[in-house]
Amino acid sequence: MDGSEGSVRDPDAPHQFAALLNELFATRLAPSGRPYTLTEVSRATKLSVSYLSLLRSGGIDAVPFDRVDALARFFQVPLDYFSQQVSPAERQAALARAARTQELGRDLQLRAGKIGLTQRARVLEMLETATRMLQALPEPPDDPDDPPRGGGPGARPPQPGEEEG
Image (cartoon, rainbow, N blue to C red; front, side, top):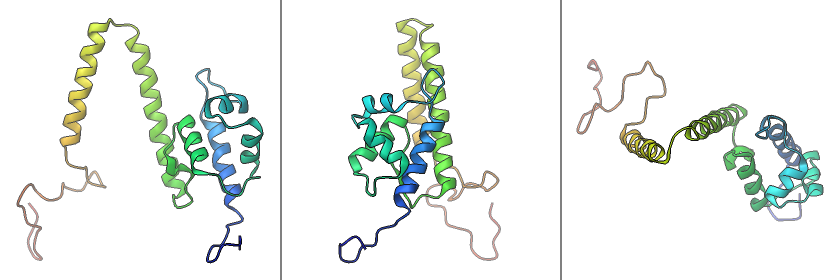
């Protein structure tokens, strides 16, 4: 117990946080392609080098939300990356999505430098149009082989004995 009524401190929590943070240090690379240093992360997050070192070693039991938020922003991961309720598979999927997004962003930046301002404005307009169109689409089914559900406005679900179609 940590002294609070009804709460139990998880002794593995600091080590889990440390493992997750160390994974970010190992996999989220600086633009130069090398891992970030404690000093670089410290400057960007306003967390001291010694505090970051304690976090990475599992020496801090409870990390305040604002500090978790600063680290999640710096490493460009969702805040729930550090959540203990997220499975490792979900965490890996979120990291993969974020990495693909970051890679696409870099590619767009490189290409944008090769075109003029007018063309960039047109590309942004096209992206905004594409975003609106994608938001209007229904959510895809979980399994790509499953047919879309619902069948449109006013459609009723198939009844027992009926074939879908």
